[in-house]
Length: 193
Figure: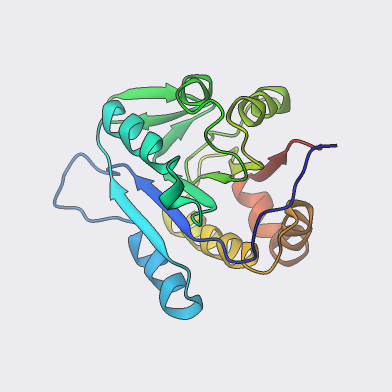
């Protein structure tokens, strides 16, 4: 059985966010949600916008450095499709992402705040975990409303602060936010499942 216990209760967040709109005057962002967690719970966060696959690759490799070891949650906030995130007019699938991050996400929780990205079979998600070394992968299987999914993301990150065991985090999400999770297709997969 694989380890499903994080190193600490406190889980800071490393976030990379895409551009939600082609019109750059529109300012939709999950950054205020991260600030809310910081102000109310002391959760630190690193935040960066990325518009190209090259930027994502660079930031993702940067995240794997030791200086970011306390950032247990890696949060991708992009448009998505099953098995991929949309970056500008291009897509990167989870297999490509896993190749770039092979063995570099040991002990991390990877969260995709993206439409449908986790709407694939469990075997493919488990392959992502095994390849990257991550403890868990979470996200959505359906098209999601920005505000509702950001709200659930905040509740999820809040819940993550109280438990080290991924199974307990999953249990608490099911207990406290079952209907909202079901409506949005929220899902957590970890290696012991």
